[in-house]
Length: 349
Image (cartoon, rainbow, N blue to C red; front, side):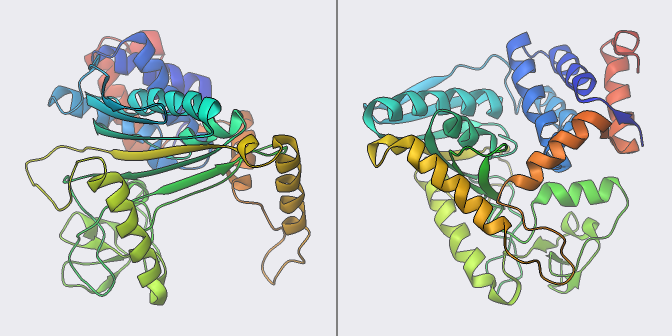
């Protein structure tokens, strides 16, 4: 598997996206987010997605240069129709508006519908935290393909339904939680398939409802389990709430329409810390909390306690030095696209 520096991967991603019709601005935003996911150690949302996005462009499921339409708006709320544009572009713009409104009015929220995949949900609340706000975001795929069973069921009815909350602090890296409410994000199963690896027990079931460690079972009628194992009713309940925030509140609906295309519905919110207490006091106490947690004596098998978000920050620092490893199957797809668009020589692939 080749190891490539982050800047080089961004260039590859951006050039291929432009070859498929994206503007320079759109390509820069999408490549920044996807390679940022690789750097954070979430390869499922990284460069592996670029061939999928280009395929969706070819099928008309993603519309480069799509209209960004605000369909309803108040001083503190925004409803955005992305008209099937790149989810990264649409959601980043919506979060910027939400941040501006929260800075002025204390709190703000937005819903977004009819956009493509938004990638790593953490990217958007982190934007808010950098501005001294608490950021939150949930996402759901509306009526497009489902992969997660309700607790006690054996047929998929829900998406992986991620949630992220990010807190401003004085820490070197952002403090946040970004997690699927399923046992695993579906993209991680795609990475396992691409790398020919099995997955841990408790992640998926096969088409007959039996536990499986074969990631290909998901594509063959299987499903992902809700977060929590024996206590999976907790992950299931949280997933349902996110389904309502991101699917029903946005107007996407729920269920599965086999003819539908991937459609990330999002709910995002931002809260101005200064509306509740002085920002610097808050940031310092969050920083002290992180250190208090890190000072915990370690359990057997652990060498360090991390604050939420710290592993991703440390991974990014390391991969910026060492480069990002790309699985052979993804690399071959990138090379084929470069040949198609006449970019092989330019990108030195």
